Amino acid sequence: MLAANSTAPRTLIADDQPDVLEALRLLLKGEGYQTEGVSTPNDVIEALKTHDFDLLLMDLNYARDTTSGQEGLDLLSRVQAVDNTLPIVVMTAWGSVELAVQAMQRGVRDFVLKPWENNRLLSILRTQIEMGHALRNTVRLKKEQERELVEARSIQRRLLPTEIPQIAGCSIAAAWRPARTVSGDYYDVLKFDDNKAALCIADVSGKGMPAALLMSNVQAAVHAFASENLSPSELCAKVNRVVSSSTGEDKFITFFYCVIDSKQNKLVYTNAGHNAAMLAREDGSMLRLEGGGAVLGPFPNWNYKHDEIELRAGDRLLLFTDGVSELRGQSAEEFGEERLVELLTQNQGLDAKALRDRIVQEVVGFSGGEFQDDATLLVLCA
Image 1: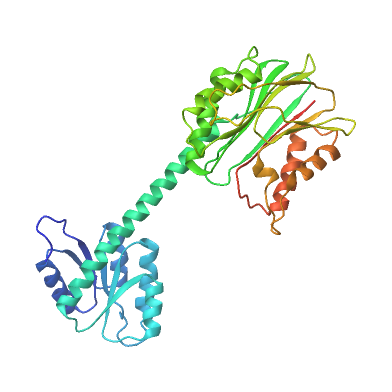
Image 2 (image 1 turned 30 degrees about the vertical axis):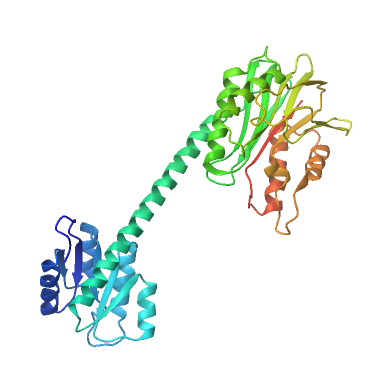
């Protein structure tokens, strides 16, 4: 018998024989169950839509003039459509392996032959109700986690630029593709005036929520410190000191930050262990922007350096994370940086949006749309 202080399980009993229905209700009521009895398939569905139950105990053979059990199987499918987590125990005076398999495929957890043995029936019901509670808790938690992840992605997306700021003489565009619901990749464009802006890109080690939380920390630090008077090396040092206190021993952030001045035609950058940005000249030459220092996180007092290069008309600058260059296609071959170089050198004359779209098209086509890691790119065309 159920403990006196436990919540009485609600059990729906479905049988088209009134004497059987009454006997089962009396048995379960004596054991502390709340019961509701119905005699037709439609009544079963209506009851499930109206109330919550811990278990359905039903006669598998509603059509007593046949041994197919088809009406009972059809009802099981209808029950699954209403609640696919509800434990179902079926009763029948006959059965077959084929029928049992079909019933289990439609959600049945256990079987009881008529005439039933009370102790065995009660034992089965207790077991299935406990298992049903555990399943429903698992499903509920999963749904809550999925909802939280969707909300987290929405929040994270709002941390990234909704519109890419533009400066005189240049066009800028970006693409961001999380491998999971949330991402450890970060990019930003911070406009200081009509001719000057900072571009940055970062990749947090790992994936999922831990990486996304650390990414938001990087974003907050960049926004707190970035200014037109702060050099890229100074910015990296400040951000590094902030995120060092938040990163574990197994976490780090690769980071690239540059300031573009289109009026003075210069680009000043610091690369903190990130993939070297590519700068394609109009004459076909290629520069890799590598210098700067160590990744952010492990070394809180690292002294970063910055480099300055001339920005010329016709230049194309590409910042990217390794989710792009290390992306694997169906043959397990990496997309590779060589393909990115080719895309930059072979697509002169495109503005940033068109060049971005061209790169994205090639990347998605190569991978078949399957991304193993977060993938982000940022394009500037002078």
